[in-house]
Structure formats: structure tokens, C-alpha cells
Length: 573
Image (tube, rainbow, N blue to C red; front, top):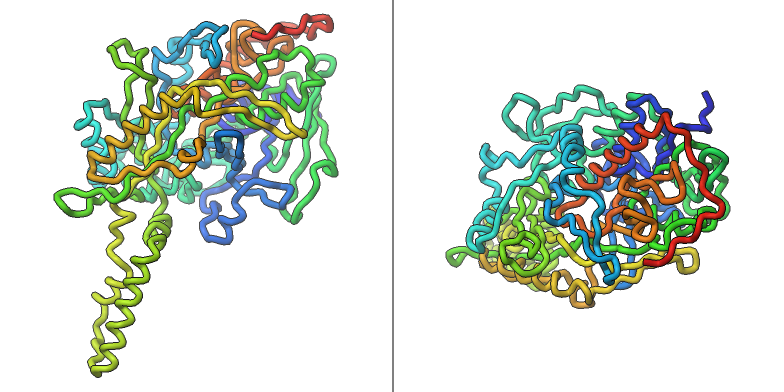
């Protein structure tokens, strides 16, 4: 069998790529996954300042790390680069898109949102993904989990504000099947993970978003991709796709191999490897897939003019509750205890039909790793200097008076401080139904995005007001993300650009992710979303990819159709 021709080549190993890789390999197809990043076994995620300084993705500078940060007009986006994609750095939440949020608006209005699928269409696929990822809710009814301060605080704030509170399903292993939850117990795996490493139940360290070194997260590399490899899938890392084109009966894909030992290189000088495939599945994420299609548009002249349209950041907004107080004392929220997210507060939507005005959202407790607490404590320079001067004066006085004070434990505690600033503060992560009115384009062969805050400002104002109410319920000061004051937001959930639709005038792909006019070319990632998911989009991306895999497998016996050379160019919607 040739290692240059496959039944399916999948570009990217995030939620869309991993799901389709497993489903197609399980069905007996020869599958190749091309992932630009490297594998990250448990224990390999960077932690030291030196390692973290290099933990970003920029091969032109010799950087092959986990975080890829993009800056566009009005918005920043953070995405992952590694085997398993965004699952390596997300906060594990798997909420289903609310049934009433599958809206079907008039396509003639600017920033419209039209979902050609329904909740009923996706529910069977949600079920399958949840089983595969072994989702579990935070075991709030067990010790030591029931004493998680931030979870208790979120439940209390929801009660005060009269808003629904929930424990969302998390792709984290807290307990082995049939056993009570316990931190740090070896996880029993039915199928050994592709890294060959022992994984452990959640140690409640708050490090989910920078990579779990204990393997507690049920990331895509230890679930879907391990199963895909078991069924024969060829997983190629440090392989970045540069371009692709149609061939007789399929597609040709050209990719470059990255070498992390090189200090830097120029992409134009890379030697490319060529593969051919019957089916090409683009799953490089919203930014990656949209960029690749825009860059390769000359090879696909009949692509919909909707390409690049309908971008949104899923309403993402980061804010902070700072120095909570209760009964005149600092209120401990312990942001580093537990997984990053344990619970959520749902902000109702006018679509719910209960008379609530405005667009809905979810607000979640956003924990952080313990080392970030030291940054918070030492960032208050005057307080640090006061403690240092006080300690020095006490030691000087002890020397002058010849009173050695050999037991200085209490004095040393004063030097370190009480840690109240970090213990009583908590990030809040909001996401919901912003307006998908952003447009991608190419500028000097780079991805550009025209997105502005203005259209979604009423949604963000309502979200910020609710976050402020939560902070005040804890006796805390509300602090906006500094970028907000520059009319900018940060998203970790970029969506759109290759949106699905009923026709090529409405979208780039059909409701199953197949690109209009190009049979066998599929998109299976967040770029197919015609608008915001609302809650964390990982589960919906995976469910749609599972549905796409069903369609690919159903099509197998059917002869493929050639793209019409005289197909009319779709009119702009």
C-alpha cells in the first residue's frame, strides 16, 4: 500500500480533525492526519519561565510551542498548536448548544445567523462524543470537592441574582468507573493512550489551560487520536499544509515538515511533501482553515463568495472579581483549587421565550495555576516594599539590641504576606451570542480580519453588568480586561469564515460540512459555524464533525462527481 495516497487526508487534529480521523479509520478507511504542532505527552508541558517564553507558535522565529496568538482589528485570538489541537489548552467544558439558539434569521440582514441544523439533528452526535470523551461533572457532593470555594461562591451568586447555576459536563477524569472520586489515582484505560504514559485523576491544580501534566484531561490525543491510531490512522506531527488542489478523482496536498532544531527559517524555502487523497477534510481551526481556503482560492474558483464571512468570537469576555470580602474580612475564593472551570451561571436570552430581553450568555469560574498567584502577590510593589523594609528593620533592631530572636517564623510570614490579594480574587469567563459580522481576507498573503465591537456592544454591556453583579455579590471589586478600554476583546473560541448553509449563496459548505461545488472536500471545525454557539463550542464542533463522518461513510459506495467547469459563480448574498 502506498504511503502517499489515502482514502482521507485530514488537516489538523482538533475537535473536528480528531473525531473524523477516528470515525473514518474505525470504518476501515486509510486515513492520514497532518498536524503542524508537536505531540505533548503528560509531563511535557512547559512550566519554567524560560520554557514558557518559548511556548508560542512562530516557526519563522524558531518557535514551535503550544500557543498561537493572533491580533486583528478589534480582537485578539488564542488558539492551540499541537497533537490534539485546542483540547490541550481548553477548560474542558462540554455544554450542548441551547435548543432555541439554533436561529434562522433573514440572510439579507447584516451579520445574520442561519443554522441549517437543529438540536435534534445533533443530539445523537452529542451523545456519542460525550461517551468517547468520558465527560464527568465536577463531584461537588464529595469531599474534598464540596469545599471548593469558587464553586460555592458561584452557586451563592447565582442564587442572589436569581439566575440558573449548573455544573457543566467536563472532559476530565475525577474517578475511575465504579469508584468514588479521588485526586491523583492512576486512570484505568481500556485502550492505552498513544503516548504510553500513565494518567492520573484530576489533582485540582488549576493548570488545565496551560496543559495538564498529569493527563487528567481527556484530551483528544489520549481519546480520539489514540483510538484512530489503534485502527491504523497515520498521525504525522510537525507537518504544516501549505496548499492543495483538485486532481482527477481527488485532491493533492502539499505540506512542509518542521524541524524544531532549526533556530529559524523562511517558509518559501521549505521542501514540500505531496500526498494524494480521495477526500480532503480541513480541520485546522477557524483561523487555519479559512486562511488555507483563501490562500488556495485560485485552485478552487467556484468557492462560495461567503468564504471569510460570518466571523465571531463566540461572545468571549474575560473579567476579574478582585479582593472579595465577607463580614469585613477577605473572602477566600481559591482560584487555583480545582480544574479551571467547575460551574457556570446562565444568562437568559430573549429567544428563551420568558420575556427576558437581550442575547444570552454563560459565565464561568475561570481558575488559574498556582504560580500565577505569586505574580498577583508580587505585582503590588508598594506592599512588597513595605514588607521587605519592615522585615529588614526588625532584623536590624534585633542586632542592635543583641536580641537574636532565633525563632523568626512569624517575622518571615510577615515578609511573605498573607496572600489575600490572590486568594480573594477570581477571573470570570463569559461567552454567548455575539453577532457574527466579521470578515476575513488576505493582506500581503497574511490573514486579516475586519471585526469591530460596535454591533455586539449591547450584548457585551449586558454581560459585563452581570459579571459586575457577581463580583459585588462577593463583596469584590469588578475589573474589566484592560483590552476592553481599547475597544478590543480576546477570544479563545474564534468561529466562522466557512459557514454552513443550505446553498452556496448562504454558505461555504452544506449542512454536512461538504464544500459546495467540490465533492469530497469537507470542513470539520469551528469555521463552519454560521454564528456563535453560545456556550463553550468544543462539543458542538465535535458533534458536527461526527455528523460529517456519517455523511462521508454513507457516500462511500456512490461514484464521486467532478466539479463542473462551467458552474456559475455564486452571487453574493
